[in-house]
Length: 70
Ligand SMILES: [Zn+2]
Image: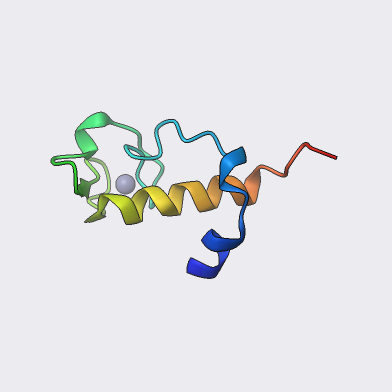
C-alpha cells in the first residue's frame, strides 16, 4: 500500500487522531502511544512503528474521502 500512500492527496486528509488511532481496529486513545516512536493498541493489541500506523490511517481516510474540489 506504499504506492497508494504516495498517490493520495494527503493535504486533503484531516490528520487529527491518525497518530493515536489503531490502523487495525480503529480504536482511538492517546495511551495507544506508549512512546513517541511506538504504537500499541490497548484494544486489539496491534503494535508497530507509530509512523507506519499513522500512515495506514491516513491512507484509509484518503480512500474514503473523495476530494470535493472540482
Ligand atoms: Zn486496535
